[in-house]
Length: 85
Image 1 (cartoon, rainbow, N blue to C red):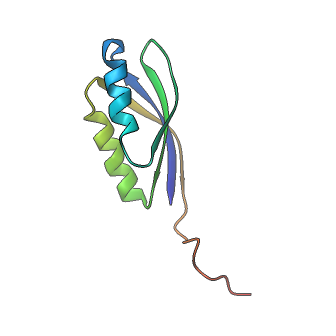
Image 2: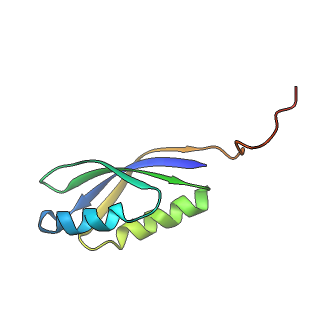
Image 3: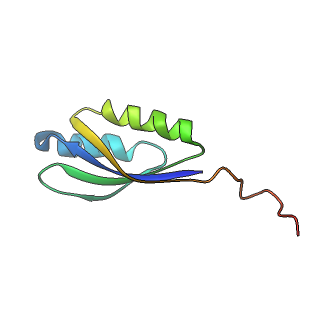
């Protein structure tokens, strides 16, 4: 599991368009946005490689000028694995 958060800087004139595209991305949640084009998001993926690919995809969203990761947590253990006593 990989959970991360980022500030996505969007051209203000394209804020609604970019937020619509971001909202459509699986595992991404928008938590806040400002009229100046700063959008706070969290991303949840199965592994680190998928998360890295998601950050690359963020840069391709129309109107996105920059993406800055703020926090990242990765846990390689599965929640379904049995714990030995």
